Image (cartoon, rainbow, N blue to C red; front, side, top):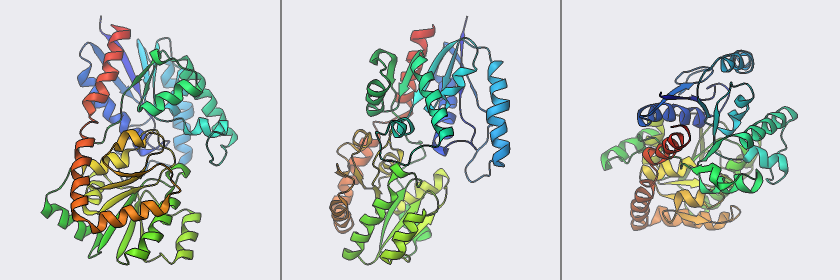
Length: 371
């Protein structure tokens, strides 16, 4: 008899875009790869959320915390796979069956423990995080998207390595390098006649450290007057806005909202470099996406970022080393040979992270435990 695994994802209106996209990729790939196991995918609401509204907050809350648990109780399968640590609470209402959880990071839990210097969680968020951690500990198997995340699971949740499979994340296959003509067209369309363009991709979450990127950019402006910084991921935080005003950077810093994959591909291709100043990442997709497009990367090596960029980026170990990162950007912008070298190294490094590699680890675990 063919065993059934139900892949459980987030509501697009109650989680990050990257989590929902990961769910969609898993749903498509696992259904094709798991030949001896039936994989079905379910989430509170299915939709293409690129640029679309997801509904009133009250409607999303009702759908997630009233309607969805009722649906979960009626599912019948041999196993259930929750694709994000923040969804592990689903396990409390699921029927009998094996539990799998993919863990991308432990940022919220480590913040709750006081191990990360971020704003304390609200009491509601704390309760959800505690519930999720309890379910992760009870899971039959856990998938970690990086070696760093696997190490954190063993250190802070006391999970044994035999219960963990590392299934590295991967960038969408649509991230690709353009031809020379395509690069020129993308640059002209997005950035006009700007002499130098640095991009930063990520939300204003504290661990993304976008303020650090602004500090690096302020130093860079002293060397190269014609440079602009384009930040993808939503409007400026109050702290960022204050820093921009104080530093006189208003005309040189531009914010963009959520972009479609193809728009982001054009951003990476049209830019001179991606700047990553994160202080923590469970994986870190932007540098991988950029390298897959042939865009040079200047990055910290915090948490999992060292695994992602390898030796294909100019890196610093300490995100406070803003002077070093600014100097690296000066070198990238002024040295054409260095840019070409980083482009080549980046494409080679990105080729190590494939959908096949990521999904095969999941399929192998399914088959080992269920068949």
